[in-house]
Amino acid sequence: MTAAIFLVTGLALMAGASGRRDVGVTLFGIALFAAIFWFNHHLTAPLRLTF
Amino acid sequence: MSPLVRFGNALGAGGLALVLAFAFAMQFLLNELPCPLCQLQRVAIVLCGFGFVLNLRLGPQPAHYGLVLIAALFGLAVSGRQVLLHVVPGSGSYGSAVFGIHLYSWGVLLFLAVIAGVAVLMMLSGSGRFDHIRSDVQAAGQFTGFARLMSTLLILMTLANAVSAFAQCGPIECADDPAGYWVAKFLPSFMR
Image 1 (cartoon, helix red, strand yellow):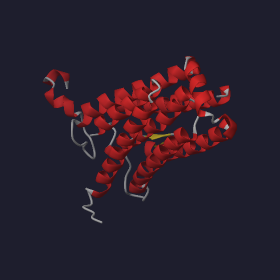
Image 2 (cartoon, chains in turn red, blue):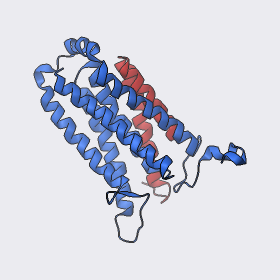
Image 3 (cartoon, chains in turn cyan, red):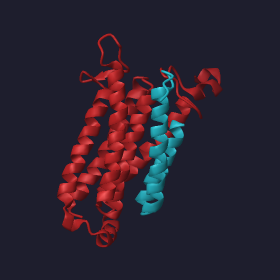
């Protein structure tokens, strides 16, 4: 999962560096959303927290 | 884009790539594998760099600085969480300390520095220079030398982290306290 997030972020960077802002920002959004999801998973899963 | 703003953004992208390189050095030279939260801090560092790269390629814009700030806040949340895990005396720590401070505490300082740096760069960019159409064309012509080198370095470090994370964690989830590389179990015994 983390490797996939890095890969999507790398693609976002390459899109940004080649001037494709729309593609880059979309990939950035996907990577950030996935990273927040994964962070939330690491926060809640070990403690079995529910909200 | 003024030379100072371009240099500041290139320094931001290059500085973040350098931090990732330092983390790699600790991972491979000291054999300190990054924990899941450490990996997420690396992700946040790369995400911060995205806004700097956009500024270098397309010219400085408030939206690009906004992306850096969002990523820095995410990094602050992750590194802050890890500091809170270990801040109580007797709760242990993760990894070696550098100049007496662990990497996750350096992470908090780094993301605060990024936020402060973006504030300064936004002031230097000035409202008069946030002309998108003109700055797009100008910046595309100026995306050479130091700026391009730093952006390329950040991209390479990101892709190297993708490979490293896959080698360590495999396709699903990292161990909370990683002891070795996931990929090692597929290697012949003499290569492990």
